[in-house]
Image (cartoon, rainbow, N blue to C red; front, side, top):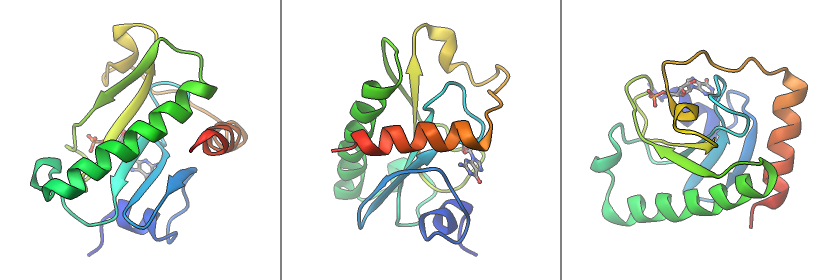
Length: 131
Ligand code: 5GP
């Protein structure tokens, strides 16, 4: 059974896409901690991030850096926080969360409720800044 994130990367399940190449895919988290909260995944289906082969892990990190730079250009924040949990979806992913204070990356806090229009606008703006 493919993971939900594999199905998203293949376009079988819709997502608010930020960027992709042949190995990686970035899209907005559907339950964001902050506007611009993005997930970055490898297309290869590996559950635990530290089980990725070294080249893929390095590539994922470099791809996440480019995505973070694009988020910074759109979402006013002090910096982009990085988290790896993976307790919910068994497909390696990096959370990128715009931060102004430490509590902005508290996964226990209530998630933002954004409209489809808001998700689309944020995704389009960040995607346009991806280089
Ligand atoms: P984790 O596995 O890192 O603990 O959490 C998985 C994250 O993926 C959560 O923040 C959750 O909101 C997000 N997520 C789960 N299912 C979907 C989905 O179908 N679409 C999107 N965009 N995000 C998802």
